[in-house]
Length: 353
Ligand code: NAD
Image 1 (spheres, rainbow, N blue to C red):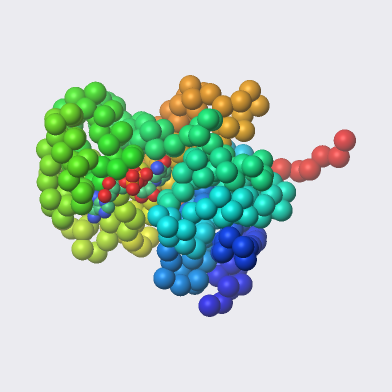
Image 2: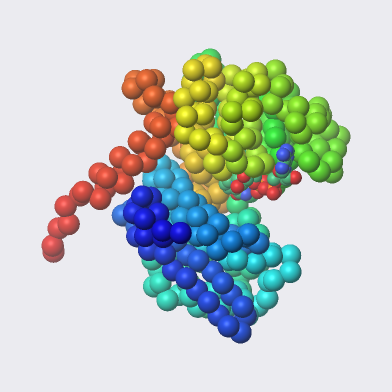
């Protein structure tokens, strides 16, 4: 694996390998870009098949965090930690404390938080060794409800762009993945009296959505074929791909999942099919906004965080405007908006006092 070549291609600043022989910690911290501020991004614990896979994940996810924070107007760069291990079996106090000590050595260049396979409680242990950790249980906690709220706000912006009204009442929305974000999203949709279609590979949450929220359940693979206003991927990445794209019978793709497009060209294909795509790293920015608010000068406030999450609507409308003006897919327009802010803030002259 050509690590420096990958870092050059993706424009990373730093890649840190962490090993602790007592706890067995094997972690990789990728810092993508700190032009706007310290690199914030959660730590993922995953049983990777190979070290190459773990490195690639850290590089890819940290770059995504740079773009997400930039587009949301946060003064943060992008970073990500990955721990190689099984989150169900390998978590120990020693592991988290060893990891916290490595995060501390970076002196604040990287701030960690929870992610797939890690919890606010794990981060509480990390915080015994470093101040550079967010998403703590007694502060912002689980980001999923806030991510769901941001996704709901983003869906309303999509409908406003298409129809001039942001109302979701009576609109049909097909939600793929009824997990932490998907279920909370369905609660917002039910409150606004949208028509909800749900699918998940596990029946429990689907049954709950049917019973409690009046949703209609479909088999996981049938979700792509549903005639609806909005298809909301809230499970896995890469669900917009060669196999699924022609099956979609929606006007909008707007969901919380990361990396929804399998390849960049799928953004162009959605545009050609007249389907409005809400770029994932814009519409799912609620979680990072929530975590970042732990560093607000007046301390964490859920209300302040939610008011900032409301700006997802403006960001999406800005991205759609760039897409329309320049005749480019919304996915490319979102990258441009993010890159332009990094470029322009990075160019402001330093003034000696
Ligand atoms: P989760 O694990 O709680 O939920 C995911 C759900 O998707 C699970 O119920 C799972 O059974 C289901 N699923 C898996 N494969 C499926 C398939 N083929 N068809 C239908 N359902 C399937 O995860 P989450 O925290 O709700 O996150 C959902 C997505 O949003 C992920 O892609 C995540 O990376 C992204 N995201 C989450 C946050 C957050 O704050 N949690 C923030 C940003 C992005």
